[in-house]
Image (tube, rainbow, N blue to C red):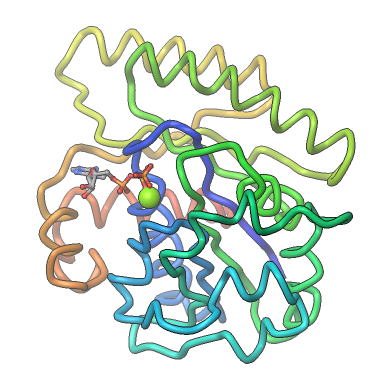
Length: 250
Ligand SMILES: Nc1ncnc2c1ncn2[C@@H]1O[C@H](COP(=O)(O)OP(=O)(O)OP(=O)(O)O)[C@@H](O)[C@H]1O
Ligand SMILES: [Mg+2]
């Protein structure tokens, strides 16, 4: 099973939107895909129409052996959902080996899926560390602004710590530009700077850039995947290109 964590401690950069679009894109291509919503905000859980009642992802972090029973099957795909109590994970998950809970959980279901897509909260706490420890690769969504650039450098030190202590084979698959507007000069300039930042992190800026696109917001409001809601939108084209790039099928 290929496990991809979508991470960025900066809020509102397009993590949930990107996690959803990558997972839905993989499902369209016929891959058996499991979503994991590790954000207490529950955006993925909402869009897939899963319930936040029950132990869900927090239960899995506390008792990794329960992973299989916490999977919900929805029309849009399988998900281990979020719940509001996940917000307390940093104080609840403190035992020795706390970084490895999700990794252990995923090992019990790895034969059943081709891909696992993990959405993470905008923080660098125990949840994001679990996601980075459990994943084979991480994707960093970012907007083209200076604060985002600054945030990625901070993120890199967490990634290096996880590599050193918990997951030596962790790879950063790439940075993906979201809500991109190519007409703005400053955005283009920052995109170039992001390319350099990516190089410093020994990764790449994905060639596929996700343009600013209202259809994405509408799709989320109506709990549909972008591919179904608006097959001809820029976002559909951009996310399809991103999925192909991830699969090496450009
Ligand atoms: N390409 C886009 N075009 C237009 N709106 C977008 C695009 N990508 C994301 N958005 C919108 O931007 C907002 C933030 O996106 P999203 O929730 O995916 O970010 P996030 O990084 O998951 O946020 P958080 O850190 O709070 O979890 C959402 O309202 C989403 O609909
Ligand atoms: Mg989110």
